[in-house]
Length: 342
Image (tube, rainbow, N blue to C red):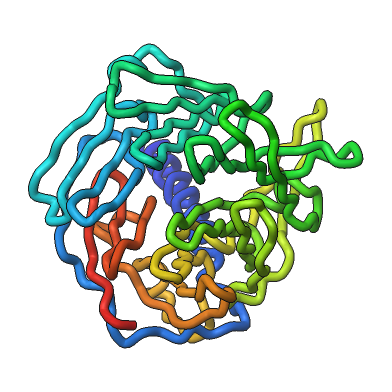
């Protein structure tokens, strides 16, 4: 019995050690670049615990932060910026709708839009919460949907090009008519190698598409015309992915090397959470904080970096920059930081 217990403990320890080494593999490698760090750190202003459900940030305004539940996007929560008062809001008419795939929610022109990527549908909600209009935007699933206007949507999908399934960014009307399309540069397979995150900045009327597996992002206008392609501060120029094709389906055979994680656009700047440690960083600083690199939205040039502290040892799950403040989610903890002059 003792031998079995010891063996189980050794196996558990081996698994934990292997997982720790794998999860921190990027922090132990020389990456060939250095960061310029600000001498001033964001300061924690306030934090609050949410329900034990997954939330996402819908919108930040001068008087409130609006969140929505990822599995129930019709249930929303408004919290003031001091995180002291809360108000819930529910679109009850959507309770029986099955939301599948990656869900996106946006506010434009006094409407709230809920996009169900798995169903390829959009739902438009006005002042009257009992009246909801829906529309089929595509015949295939999409994700990371953004709303330009009530009649203009942009999202990530795929497109068959010369018998190759390519990852594509599409612009469609409310009726689902394709208006424009942007195909990211193909490096390996044209799909997995181009995976990334799409964000729209209503102030500048620009999109930024951030690649997960290579050190690049592209800036697009509302007609999906590329304004520029920028190189992130790291040295990774090509995606490193391995996949298997079986029965016409592609699957990763090993976890891809992650370069970029999340981003936010605000006040003419692009804030990117990097997955790579610079050579001039301490492992302890990188492993227990989140590193954010700042780029100019006009031309994509790098300016400076800073660390965003973790809250209660939880990793960052989402963040949004708003007027010298960072609104950050750490699982079910919501935090507000003030950004000093960097």
